Image 1 (cartoon, one colour):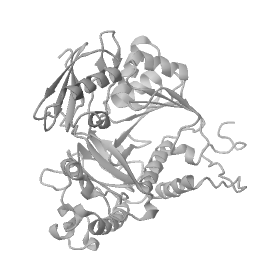
Image 2 (cartoon, one colour; image 1 turned 135 degrees about the vertical axis):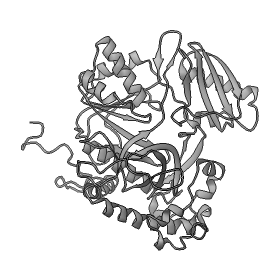
Image 3 (cartoon, one colour; image 1 turned 60 degrees about the vertical axis):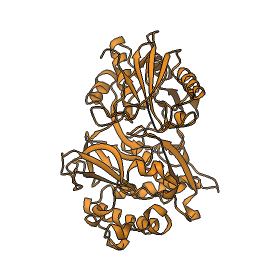
Image 4 (cartoon, one colour; image 1 turned 45 degrees about the vertical axis):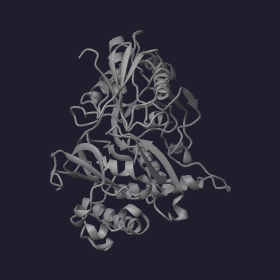
Length: 458
């Protein structure tokens, strides 16, 4: 009996010791995530005005700390004319300066907090290139990670995933592996089924064969890669029949992807909107085809060119503030994305709605053997080899690539040789590669940066 009266519900935490089996007391990390999750379960149903009031209550604390402990923000209250953290509200906050990626890239140390409280769990660094292709380093605290884990857990619960089933993940940073559980956040407090991972660099035919062999119930994959898999399975009439739910991320969701997933895989589709600097920004509503901003952790603004908030359905630039990152506060940070706010959702949740997100698009790579695959070489790959500030791989032919890069100087012969070797190794083919230094790299038609562009067939 899967969910019957004689069997515990699958989302019952496991005991962490001390002889308590029921109700369970999971380990401390699990307790923290569950404590946040309990509050998220309540806050999602608050009225929009009540959610906004709580956001600004938290924002004032963040600004008070940043103004005192973060060099970059000293004097911001005065220069913006706000004067005091207690005077921050929805209207006055529009005067706070918008933060650009270039500012962080050029002076990231000035954004680090001096004297982060020990209770925040230390500083953890990450590297991202985001929507501009310009590498930057961003930091968060251990506490910030707990909020992210709670939001991912919210997604599991919203989409009614059964933790006892198998979870498959295909992404650029994943190697082929079999794992005993789903990993965080689920395994912090719950017993889960196994997880399997595969790199998106694998040929799509191999990815599809792997999915059919592993027979997972759930799949997490980049939206572009996911659509290519569904299309391939349609052409070959080889659907992975075990999959019940697919979750897309990173690239802009193709408009037909939910229809294709349902029609060809009989699977539900949910999208996520996130960025490396702040993690989850919005999750797909479990009952409506739109995204809910995760307002408990992020203040997300959509602005017109003149800085005024956009009306529902009006496309504007996305400005975000991480409400719980005291290690490296990013206050009114411009992502480089465009989105449109929506009307309140019929599901009844008070969380703001994103009607659409004009996210990054991505071409697929090929090689002369006929292999088709998704390639994404993160910012860390490039900065570990050469001092590039922006880069793009352009596929000119099935066996030929051009690397376009922006840097303060020409790369040395050794740096170019290392890049060529690294790209050939990552893309698994001995491509003919040329490297070209350029003054800048233009954004794509959607206003987003593409780190890989295919010219084949154009």
